Length: 199
Image 1 (cartoon, rainbow, N blue to C red):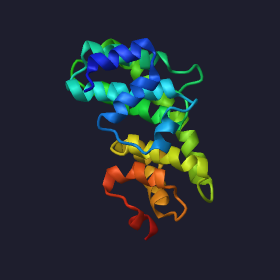
Image 2: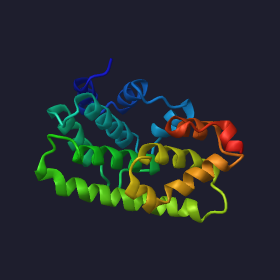
Image 3: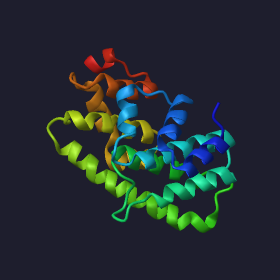
Image 4: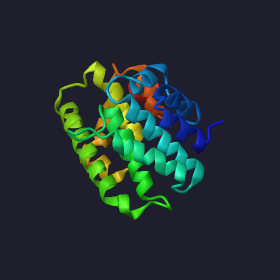
């Protein structure tokens, strides 16, 4: 059983592997390949903190002290160049920060910093998805990132439009060569299946 106190403790300890594993086991099932991508070198700490913050907010339905600590740690992981790492890290951070903004108990003195972090992460993600949309076909190493981005931002309507996520998702589902891992990540969103992917 995961609690916001456990999430906070793992976040403070900097134990991103255990934090990520605990959160993914608790209502965020992902295939092994996707779990390994989340734990990869390009932003694993940020992914763990972002998913941890998301789960802590869900558990409390308010921005408690535990959530506030994890939020601060996530903000501290923003890179000088903007963003939180790779595509998955940026998408997870955007979702977590957006959830925090909309949660009762959010501290107004952090609003500007959170909004700026969302803006920079969105820009970093836009640059990545632009490259994906411009290519004739998604590169194999990018389709899982694309699926993870769609998974994290599927209900962020403004960002879906800005990043062209509807087209990106349709392309992933429609492509015959899309990996099983990418399809599995998308399957929890709208009942996507391999049959639909082949259609």
